Every structure is written in C-alpha cells, then in structure tokens.
Length: 105
Image 1: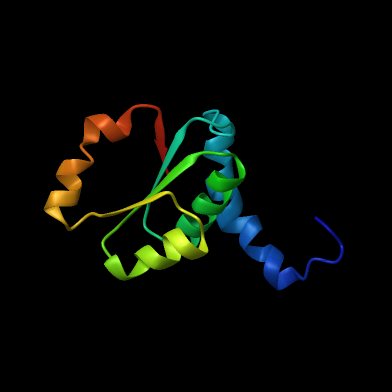
Image 2: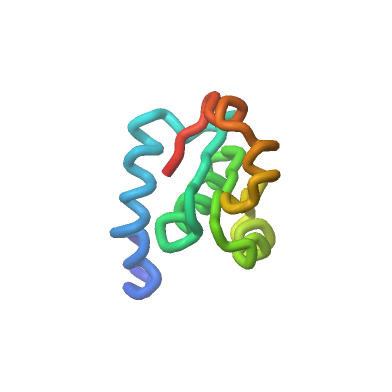
C-alpha cells in the first residue's frame, strides 16, 4: 500500500475490496472480455464496479433502487444497470443471456 495513501481511503480496500477481489481472481475474472454482474450498489457493489472496470470487464449493476443508476453509470462507470423490481427489464435481460460468462458478486 502506498505510504501516501491515507488510512481512511485505504480501509475499504482491506474489507470490501478483498471480499470482491478474491472471487474475481479465483474464477479468472481479471481479464478483458468477460462480464461482471453486481447485485446491489453498497460497499461491495462499489468495489465490484471499480475492480471490474480496472480489469476491462463489462460491468452490470443489478439493484432495486432506480435512483442509483446515475451513480453506477456516470460516477463509477458501470456499463449497464438493471432494476430488479422492473419486470420488463428483467425479461429483456433473461437469466440465460446474462449468465453466460458472468460472475456475480
């Protein structure tokens, strides 16, 4: 960890960061061309989007909160956002289509 990185900024990397990074690394989701689906946009979801972007993955956030779409896409850089309570959106993104080559965190 860089010595000039304040501890309050490094702390999320030590908890949420390793919780997300570990399965990504274990299942080989650290290279371009794969898809990452994150359920929720809390602490783990934020880290999943950031790591996914860093690894060149196509990142989709799945959330019950439509109000989080702007943050997911414009601030964190998610490629797609699905509102799980929207039946139409869920039908468009069927489980079979989304599941192929996707890790969910």
